[in-house]
Image 1 (spheres, rainbow, N blue to C red):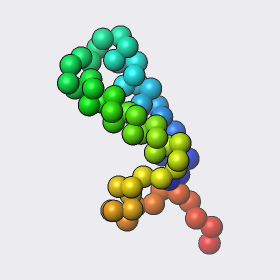
Image 2 (image 1 turned 90 degrees about the vertical axis):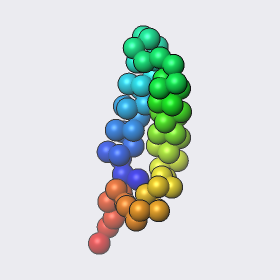
Image 3 (image 1 turned 45 degrees about the vertical axis):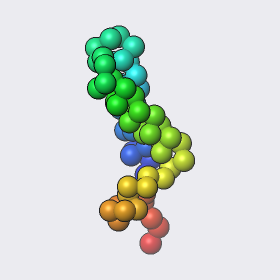
Image 4 (image 1 turned 30 degrees about the vertical axis):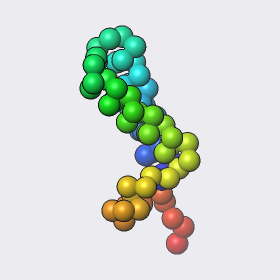
Length: 64
């Protein structure tokens, strides 16, 4: 997972947490988005996304 991908995931997770904190999102949607945000943070910290391997995606720059 590339640096830009990790940064975007962290920003999205922070946005979801802020929306929840300020009661803009509520109920089941809030909990689903918080779970997704937690997954984004986790995959950003370990720099690995299992879905990327399933679909054959790679956002990390490689040296030639």
